[in-house]
Image (cartoon, rainbow, N blue to C red; front, side, top):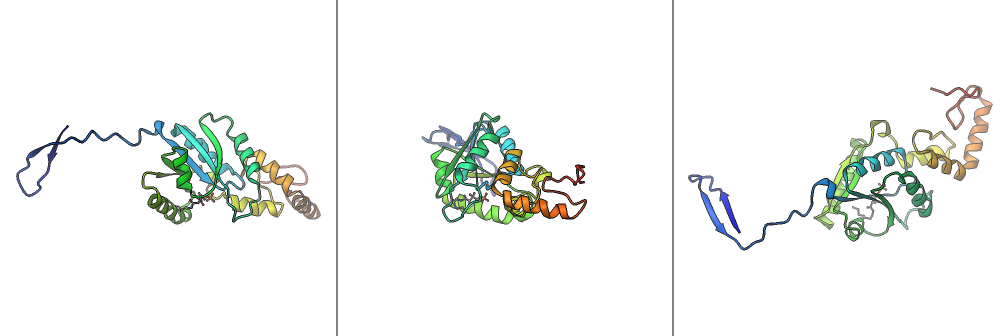
Length: 221
Ligand code: PNS
């Protein structure tokens, strides 16, 4: 193979001919349409922000694997089986999306499923520092794996699983923050909290119940 180099900044520009036996370097990654990506997370529970990001990812990657972390250190609100089921239901319309779970190092799991890219969402500047740290650590662990950041719709920029759990645990309304199937599951799981919240609200006229409606049934703005 012949390579021409145009270099030597302090001399006359010239061309140097180098004979090389090196094969042309194949691109390790093709265009995005050839990229298989992993979207890892806890998804406890999946929010509308997660779903928005999955839909965006599914549009640009050939294949998107949503990987739910099986974390033995944290006690999740939803079991792994519940999160798998919810995410499968929510993404059933996306043919290039697969829902799986993993444990251990994310980079090792990414490698095992031949993902060359990791998708993560950034909602606000506050996410950036943690995400940067994680992306750089993952790059140190596996330099060939690229992290790609996408922003969910701005209407979800404040939505997080942690805050959804907090609101739901106090029996508060989560409509619009999570998909309906997740809202339903939260109501089932936290039934006493919702009942208590609604009873307390009944005592104060005009207050909204956990569905975000007033006692007279009008939507509260
Ligand atoms: O939804 P989350 O909780 O923000 O997701 C965090 C997650 C699961 C992506 C991260 O904790 C992770 O990748 N854990 C797996 C263990 C690992 O690889 N740790 C090194 C990350 S730098």
